[in-house]
Image (tube, rainbow, N blue to C red):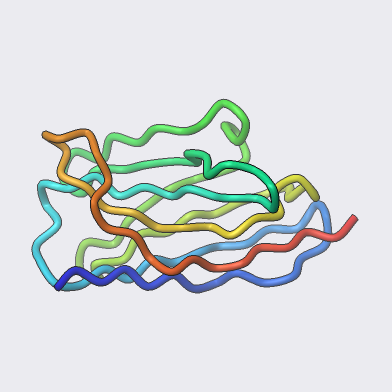
Length: 119
């Protein structure tokens, strides 16, 4: 049973930083891409960033490029998302997801962690 558990969300002032964590368990993730998505109130869920476990390839949405860094710790089976220079528009529930690289889809999702940015 694959489990993804996010943590690290909270209330932050604009301009601050946060590091979100996603602890993955239930299988070996070497063939998986891990992603972060977010959903703001009244909006559709959107892609933020992704990384592969083995090749270190990472991708970022244009809206966050330069402010966000995705990384992973294979020994801890954990993926991180660091967000700098937070803006009120970054307020959203952030979700961790996992999917086989070969399928290009995300099959597993965490419950999400709330990030709120005050102006």
